[in-house]
Image (cartoon, rainbow, N blue to C red):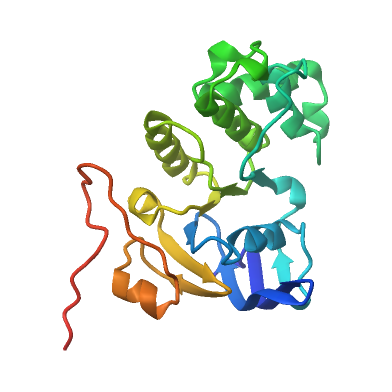
Length: 248
């Protein structure tokens, strides 16, 4: 069996002595697609930042078998100053700045990568548009292109569907499912009913972490995992979010 890309062992993290995460254990492997769910303030974003190496746990450890340049990240509430004169293409190109490989330093190679990333997210026609003129969905597409431009091994997204329309939301998750054939994905979401058809497994985070080896989870299991969130479905959902459990 291959080594995990990320291995979290007995991790604990606190802000000003206030424990946010405790006794967290998780192994993340190639081609995993993990949905991270939990209540507000439960520690989801803290977990993501620890995985990214932005926070150092007070106890335990987070080990990586990949370089930081091999991680793509779409943070929650991404934004830029609308008055800043920068185009969509320039924002996406900035995703190549860290850990830049020699072949990407050439202007022609950079533009090829930018065009490929923008076309992947359906933004090729808006390459020269100022980012201040984008809609919420267009801006999130731009930031996703920036996160995937270096073809990362691990893509981390912290509630990427915030402030976007339903059409973009559906297209986003379909694209992520496609990208999962090329990279591992961690997706933080507040809506398990929407992401269930796309993810493979679930991590319930509410101070501690419970890993669920399926993309379907019941309200009963959420209670057992101490993960007080509601399972919400939208319109006609072509899958079952809550299974009936037969007790033997």
